[in-house]
Image (tube, rainbow, N blue to C red; front, side, top):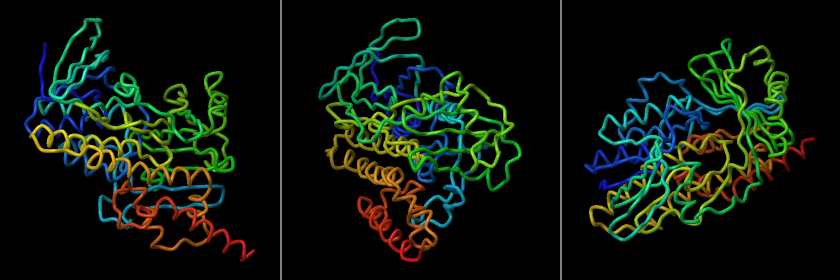
Length: 411
């Protein structure tokens, strides 16, 4: 029977950040990963705040060597209306740029860098049973040949993402409050784009705020293009090999024919009903991080940043716990992560109910307001000196109401 200090379930961004940080503190860490790498994943547009997490866990330099596409901002487009945010103009003093990445390459880079630090990563290993106690945790898993193994540890960090290992085994999942949505996507040739188009993510709103398109440029001349909408719309677009998806992105007016003659790098893929919540983020001998906690919606590219933020904070709390210090998991971990999730939840809701779009597509948006919103879009959702973080649950609806009244009065 193998014995280690910490077992991390999942080798994605949350798991590798957590494992790398703990290894740096001197712990014996093993990662159990169900899939083999490299593997395809969406969530390709990072936010500047995640650079801090990569740096603190010692993974930033490895990612920098890959020459991923630099991302300096985000653009929102709706017909003739357009609003661009540049991270260099944000309210919070933090990173002013990040990367846009093919997740297969990004995750592989993080995994290899984590292995180079001495963390043992076991790929194609499926966790089948977990028993937790005050001093020792026991995990059973099957390797790719179907052989069963047992590993014990002092603590478990579940970073299993969409696999949601412990939420599934311990019945911790709960439904999302959001309407069921889906996404269909592929990578397309995009070799003639401008430099400006290369350094931003582009979000095109349509269908009365209910649907939108992402365009995420990569450094190899290709671009990830996805459509998000209600489940029925996505299922319809996915039929017959995604023919309706292909036709839509080639003829959509706001894309200006950008992909009219582009070849797809792979046949369109789709996911449905991705939003999900969790009853609690910790328990005796374990903590959840990344998408094992909660996943909202891809509209503001928050997924990887929440993964790295929760991965890093969970590792810090485990370090404190293993040193014999008291940890208030509710206050020091769950409440902290939940506050960030709640901020983005307000903005996701504001996107789909139209409040956020009313603000960013207003005829005139005050510079200070724009800079404060920009910091939220950069992932600095724990900076409570920012009014658009501190008052997230009311400020969007209030400001949108004022803007609508003002614009109505000038008609």
